[in-house]
Image (tube, rainbow, N blue to C red; front, side):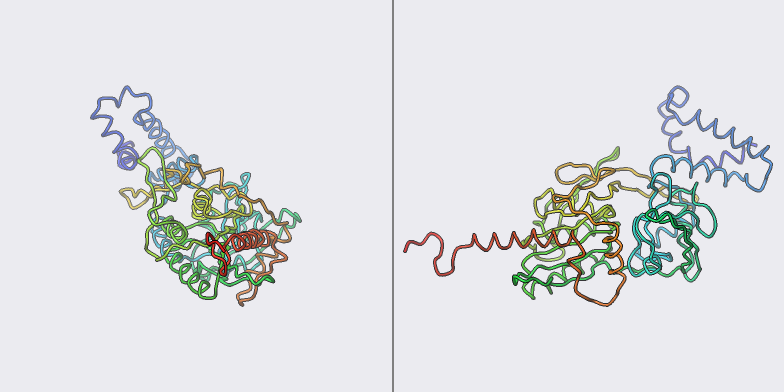
Length: 423
């Protein structure tokens, strides 16, 4: 019975056992996987031999189940991917996938919406942050991992998916029937000069997530706003779930000198420093405020943490999500793969991001009603002026930049009387 199982275990043990046997420690090292794999092999043999339903006990299925369980116990971001899942992940790097546009996390063991992505079925249906997904197509989400839940939310374009959702604020439970679409998210939105009674020209731009073209799109938007006389910028990263690390580094490069270290990674494997380049032209030097909130994660936290540490921007809003870990994808011989957390992100001053987040310089919060109103306004695809009075975080950012610009203007020497010249 063990003979076919030996081949199945090759994926798990070959590398480790070879190294240990060469060093002569395979039998004596208490931390060696060898003895433990024998326990696993014996358990799987018994399951294969005696379990009542013989359709569930192929060695491949048992091996994959064991791998899923192993990775799930490490952290929410590590996972085992079967060959088809691995292929899907590779396709997702193109920033296109069939889904509902709902960013989820586990909160107290419950599948919870972080935020619905803009211009997607989730947003258009009126799903809100903090909503709890109790069932997907009638099946309970109680024992699902994040990766299993995402697998159920994503799938063939055109298929309908029923989400049973409980809204904590009202305790109401409601079914939402959504249709999967190809998710394509434009990463830079709402770039404009904000209205100001004092004649100051404060710009605004929002990054929805970090894709390959994000830095280029933002640079073009800033060029346009600068031609309109922009004196300062509000960069809105609220509800931005992250994306490509390289894109986040490139966005930092628009505001700090080229060659500046903006993030580093450390783990059991050698770490790395990420520095800005001159890929997207000139460095912008005007005052910047970054808006961030509880749903700003990963790449958003890299940008917010770097610009805060380097004293290049004031962070306004709330402490960010705290997803500051690096996942390495390691392919296995049968086409499956491990997505394994291997390192953590650190800001330039060596502050850890993971499970801590980036705290704001100026704390400003929204009520739940204001939060819902903000998300509702973003569902409207027609360009229109931002509602400043209903957005205390944006209003606070404007106040900070307005004060900075007025103070700077007053400190500048008079054109008629240059500083240092005696009359």
